Image (cartoon, rainbow, N blue to C red; front, side, top):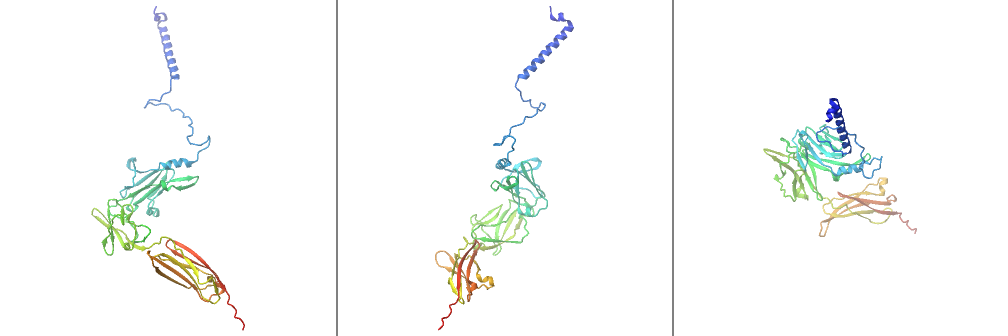
Length: 394
């Protein structure tokens, strides 16, 4: 007999309920044993309470926070500099970038913390246009209402910190040279009409004819006689970020020079540079001191000479310290410079201290200091003063 007839309509309802309960129980059992799976993308799930994660810091102990030094060092290795553009776009910078005058320059440097370096003009003239902010993992430099005078090098230095003591890591600096092209000013403005620059024989000389646009053509000129100076790339070279470099200055480079920049129909002259030639020595002087006598009788004259052998046309300055200074005895010296024969161009510079009619107060140490542009050295000699011998009675 069919089961439905046994239970009737009421029985069928009870049986259906039993079957539904069995199915639900089976599903629940299977889900309990089945491995957990990630929710399907786009499906809302109830967030679960996160479990505490184990510390990944090496060498740290439970309940002990790791010092920040190692974590900052790891961040320094990944230091990078990016330019923030409009609409939240980022662009990794190269050696140079150009920002139109009036626009905002925004640079972001990864590091915690970082220190910024900007052209000296911006450091000295704080008019509120420049701002730096340190976030948790990066620093931001913002310059608004930019002008051609803002052209220069911008650098980001990661900082190495121990507690509250931080210092720049110069070898990990990230730098970019920023041009601010100005349609009216081809050269970075300067408050000086002319600038005096030393031509040192032992050091390259830079004429910083700095332009605001990397597209400007720059030439070097001499004021008198009015000629264009040849730039061959060896004796004199040009770099758009630095200007003109005289690699081995010589006397013929001295004089009044200036730069001329041209871009399109615009042509302008720079500040004038007064170049003064200075023959720098290779090393500090090595003076030699010698007294006319180590023992002088009261009433006799004393001569103490200080001599320096050095390079030709290198000035040497002498200063003296002597016992007679204590009582106000005036300083009398004779100085001379004479060439020395031989293959190399050498000269002898000498200073002689004269002490007339020596007295007992003149006994002591005589010190000569010789100085040139590279430094100074001192030498000393000791002089003894003896009384006059008493005349023998006849």
